[in-house]
Length: 250
Image 1: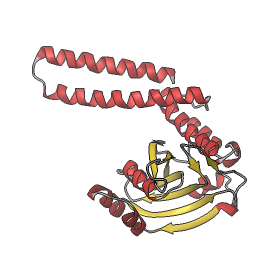
Image 2 (image 1 turned 60 degrees about the horizontal axis):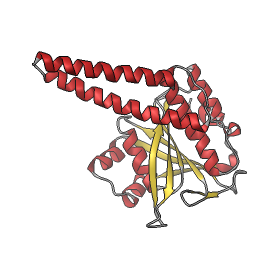
Image 3 (image 1 turned 30 degrees about the horizontal axis):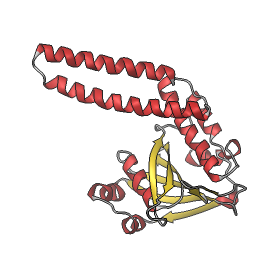
């Protein structure tokens, strides 16, 4: 099932690498804390570097400016035994590999895609800074919803920009943001860059409001005073109303 999804991307055979990345690589090239090491040991079955997209394997040019240097894009498949630490795993994998990555996580017959921009570290040109990551929800590529089907069609290689690798990667990122927006709004569509930036800002605000709601509800469970409980309930309702409005505007 996962292979059918990979085939649907239409990546040229010349880009195929299929190289196993051993866990030792991340232990030696990342500053992993105890929780990272546990996730690496217990939650990952295997990691494969599936494809390398670079000017010699696909007709896309490198990109470089004062902020970004995208010489190539790597596509990795990470097979998980447990899906609980996916964001943590995405973080240390991105820190270990100096290229913009498209991470395809698998668990059973479900997948998640993760992308994250990387910018040049002006204090140390040999290093890079991983910016905010964007991740899809888990979905079955063999039985997609209408939104997921649209997403899978849009991230096929033929539908992405070939101008340069930054434009190419930005298109993939925008598809992920569009799918995340569809999870909230119910409608999947690729938007202009201005609308995509608006969506991203709104999605971040929704995440913050949901965290605030969780904290308010935790306080509500412990609170005994009627007046304080009333205030907390009002605050929860205000958060929910704001989330609903943001979702409608996505």
